[in-house]
Image (cartoon, rainbow over all chains, first blue to last red; front, side, top):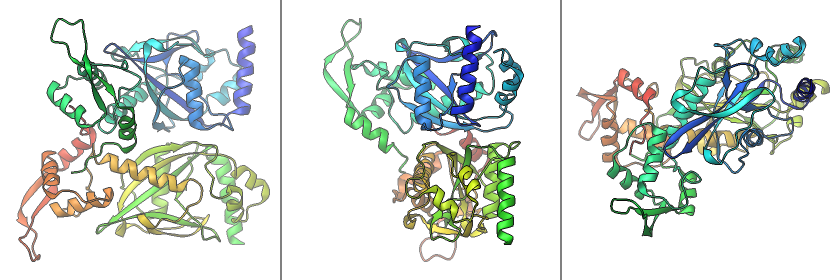
Length: 257
Length: 257
């Protein structure tokens, strides 16, 4: 009963204070210790999973709405969110009926009709250190947790396509922007950095070429200390040169013949 | 009077048959003979310019809506359109009042209010051989023509930002996808291809590195013929290997260490 009352309030709020026809979906990639995961929500009273999402308030910038949703689902706020694609097909709901899915919430038929109408959805992705997040379900869902990237089930709506395209964009981003800040500890080794790239790309890289390319960007500082504790010759520690890193993010490393 | 009647019909159509809160804007780059241009429209009874745009019908895929608008403004249909960013700030109308701009159309105040509300706009860009296009204004505009990329005036709404970001995305695309098909003649020389890249990047490239890189992609076939008519040693002619070109478009040329 409490839930039904809350749901009624939420629906009234959504109808009144949010833009119609546009929604937001978030592909939140989690990285930790050589594993890549995605944050998913289990739809109320079903065994179906979907991406976290949100809507835009009338007086709110779209990006702020995306950050608000990210914060609500993970507790994280200082995270780099990247818009990657807007999904605008009429038929974004091939696998499951949107109407049937929504009816599991126990919505009255009149609200259902309005809700089951078509949205254009703007996709954002983020890459977070997943040990630091606190997954939190919303009023439409019963559970929120991390799934291994290679074990994602058939999701509601067009959310499998969204993950595929987000991962493609993230991989592409590696060819023109640095990555790793906020994901690696302050001091890290070249193998740590290489593992991050290999995890995202899903393939192994040549050690020497990788090192040469990374050092060529001028975004790394080699420290005097070496990593201790390993059985082999201790590898050098590096850290990002924040100023050059930010410059590389802005300038992008472009093909220049 | 005829115009006012047509406008009334259009407004009724927009209110009834199109998604609220979402619009489309098109950055159409034209390439011809070493020049890069952008297609702009002059707003009714003003000297202010803006990008061509459109809206999405209830039963229409967003991409189809973008192609429809492209066709209406240029007469071109078989053109590669690329979605590049969705613009969702509340304040997308910094330079000019949206209300004042719309009032130049002679809209009744009640229609104006609805029209002057906020849209999230999905940006697409295209790159066309501009000699083949037929620029055509719409009901909101008096003129449609090509502007040199380095002479774009202060545009209505956030359209200058849109052009800047579209160009950045197009340049970025050169680092992971081939370009040139549909823009160069069937047979072309390496200097022709280099000029296309230099025009888009806005900078000169090293001739030898460019040739080496281009040949490395395996998308070019060198023909037996050479170009005739020049004073210098005749350069080889090339054409795209369509199959490899399409494969390179799909696979993308990624950073792999």
